[in-house]
Image 1 (cartoon, helix red, strand yellow):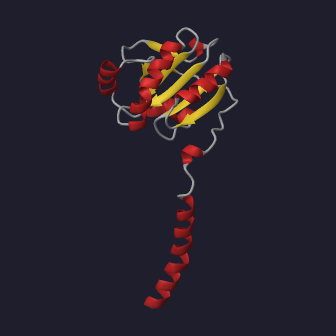
Image 2: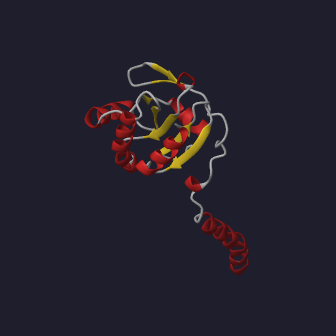
Image 3: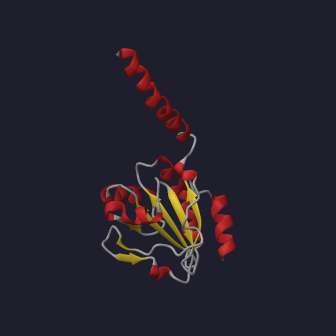
Length: 170
């Protein structure tokens, strides 16, 4: 009886283990976004001060839409880059941050200490993050002046990437 149970268990467990092992080779962040080339999902969210912001209000200018959090180490590393580029492209490119699964009070303190680069929008229930298919922070979407997503950066935003993408859009 024990031998039969062992063989039947192995028949079911071994293929499952193989399937799971093969799945670990795929990083979900490396998957191309199906949103590239499509209209960016619209949203209207409040910032930390209660002011309302919408993606539609940015029409006519490219948008750097960054999903970030204080607990995210790459977000902390990329923060000075976003501050510098928001200043460099002020009036020509909108930089918008969406708080990803973090507490507004922690974001507020972080921004007081390190500076801001655009509105930090509160995303209740992560609804906007879900609409964009965000897997984790940081994740950045570049939206052109017509409202079309032209690129997604999963992970750290670099000066080289921003130079390349924004240079092509302006």
